[in-house]
Image 1 (cartoon, one colour):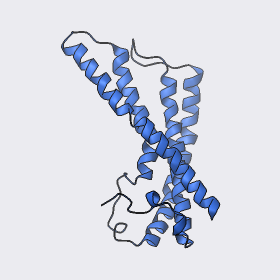
Image 2 (image 1 turned 135 degrees about the vertical axis):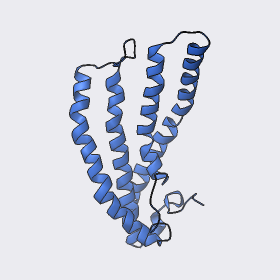
Image 3 (image 1 turned 45 degrees about the vertical axis):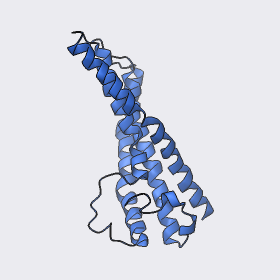
Length: 183
C-alpha cells in the first residue's frame, strides 16, 4: 500500500507543479491581449503573430492545467449522488468513473492525436494565418500533454480509491482527501 500511496502523491505532485506553473500564463494572456487591443484601437496597427500568441497561450494553459483542475476537483460534476455520499462511496464512484471514462478517453486522445501531431512535426507546421507565428506543431503537442496529465491524475485517483477502499485512508495526505478546501 506504500507504493500505491507514493504513486498517488507523485502523480498528484506532477499535476500540482505543472498547474501552478502554467496558471501564470493567464497573466501573459491578459498582457498580450491588452497589447493587441491597444495596438489595434489606439495605434491603428496589428501584429498577426501577437493575436496568435494569446490564442496559443490560452490553448497551452488550458490543456496543461486540466490535470491540476482534476486534482483540485474543479471540474463540473453532477453532485446529486456524489456530494452526500460517504468517503468510501466517493472512492468507489471515482474508481469506476476513472476506469470507465478517463482511461479510455486518454487512450482515444493519444491514438487519434498522435498521427495528427506527428504529421504536424514532420511539416514543422506554422500558423494557418498569414504573418502568424511559426511552431504550431508545438501547440498541437499540448494535446498529448493534456492526455498524459489527465491520465496521471486518473491513476492518482485510482490509487486514492484503492487506499480508501482498502482501509488505509491514513496514507492519503490531508490535501488529497475528499472535501479538502471545498466548503
